[in-house]
Image 1 (cartoon, helix red, strand yellow):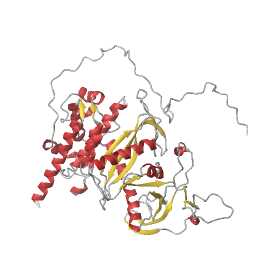
Image 2 (tube, helix red, strand yellow):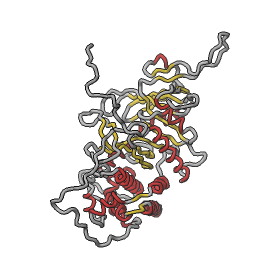
Image 3 (cartoon, one colour):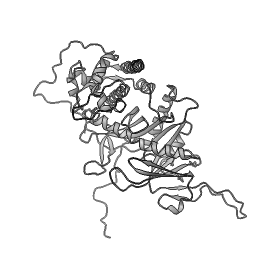
Image 4 (cartoon, helix red, strand yellow):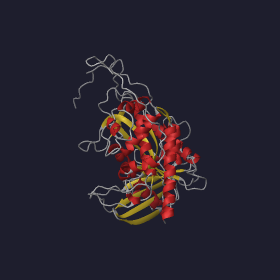
Length: 487
């Protein structure tokens, strides 16, 4: 048993050292400063409150000037870092399937008037539980999920959404690139189960399934409770009156049970947190597409995208609120009872990525730095992703350094925050390719009392259209010309 444990530790240290070497190799400029900043992020005491506070960590062997110079002037080979993220061991579901979650997390910058490329980010329950649109940098993040309740995910990619960008187009390209890298790295091979991609209601699941139909993936997405789907078209019957045969069958209205008909399958599962969970599935349902919105410029005939609609109903919620049914759309047909249970349980695992976002922001300080340029924000984001990956790889090696008021935790149940406490003890045994700092002297800076003769440019928010062109008010528009309503 002891020899087996030592073999596991040796293998884990090898994987961690290899990733750290690849991380350093992806830093093409200011590599030593960026690598020391990553180590300081992993070994700092407590949550990261300020960026300059990381310079006080013993692992950051350089001055605070090198810290900012690394983010502002450093360079990262993002493609090589992306390949390194998919080459390490990834978590899989119980059936050996890769399950990917896709979501957008904003880096809010409401007061950064000098920061370009900001756009309005939709926030949930911000302030007095209000949904507000706040300026910031939204990032689309893809993560691999584990099975069972956990706060661990394997983040594989992050893309900053620029103002006016078509989110569906960016998301489709991002998923395709991630799947291609997974196949190239050998994480998926012919004969393996299809990769399951889980998205929330903000994504158009049928459109994603249509655009990515050539990939070995399944799309599972939550849909609104007021949607209307269509049954398959009935068999064509000869009519002496002629006419075109129908393309769609009857309506399947989510809010009208009399339109549902007989279920394809029904499963009932006893859960600890939600009580009895009942899942109903209806086969071969599709949305009726029209030439507007995303399908406006579709030149060919509009496709019929069939899938399985799943309705999940639970007895109670852990918060005590009123449980409302959850509607899911799965891109496959002919679902069995096992497929239905796998789908809704995988959707519940999608919320594990929210724990990752919270850890990024509250512990690693992802949104703490007041960076001016989006390029520096992208470098900092990738450093945070690389730090989180190192914590995941060090998970089998860390010890539970708990506080006196905390309960003991099993080694396999350690959270990312607890693994980070012990990373300082693991760092000397892992590869550290960064060179020692050279002695230097800080520059004189701007003389005291002198004025800033190069003020930063101010940038507007939300002034770009979806086409990428800046918004311009019509020349004939005049303030106060709209007639007053009298009725």
